[in-house]
Length: 364
Image (cartoon, rainbow, N blue to C red; front, side, top):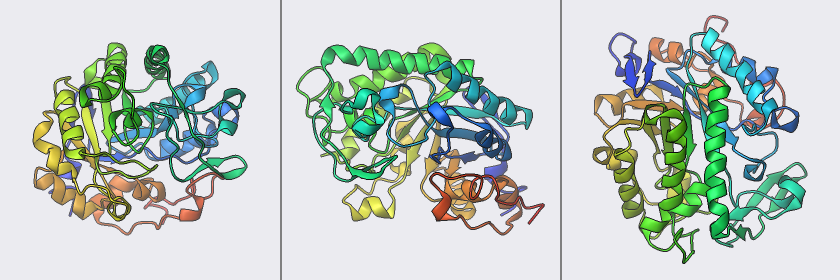
């Protein structure tokens, strides 16, 4: 595989964004935000190093204090956070890159110690997920969340809208709505976590109501051609399941197709998903149901990504671990060059080690 013959290195007009290649940096939680969840100088260097990606999708970024689910993750709801992110986007743009912000509310995947005034996390229904929350005091059992009252839900939608406005102030090129991995919007969409009997639950039409309303609120700020959305149809992470994921996600994707979004970001089933009972629904299963650009993610390497694009299964591929360890990943893939090995022990939290100290190909 070389840059001259692989579709990975062909430009793509994706909505309002003009991408020089189709090697996308996936959203990657790294737990290295500064005090008050403000992006800091270390984050600036990390993203600047990876500006050769066709597109950078930022790490998941909470839209409000109640959306926090992990230590040291950045927000986009305070003036200081907006200013911190502006230093990141300025550095990426100066290096010739493009970056969108992933908007995040974790819902029930939190813990009172991470919440304002020690309150309970919120969710569509009061269902305790299996597993443990990651807190500043180490892993703690998840708690039973508080079910949102119907009158509170418009406020959640407004928080997404304000976060989208803040992302524009911070200089991003667009936003991605995080509707995957068992977080709040995914919790509303799937019937395993949404047991409501009001207009926000029950039927699939009702379960799609909050994700759809959030998407429309974000589009009202950015326009559809600078908005993407991420889904995990087979995902079991964070104790997620659905009685009919093919119908749930197929119907939702049909709806998404009508908005003229910049892209749809779909996660293929992982080995862990399949071991835990997830449905084996690859992204290509939904290819015909979405009319726009399809981005796929699931531990792709360069050759697998090249094949997916050649076969018409996707338009772009997002890379996670490979971008952690290889800041110049597009160049390495284009040359079929050796790749740095990711240091799993430094994925979450810490300092520059395992974050900004991976060598570029020119220095290796």
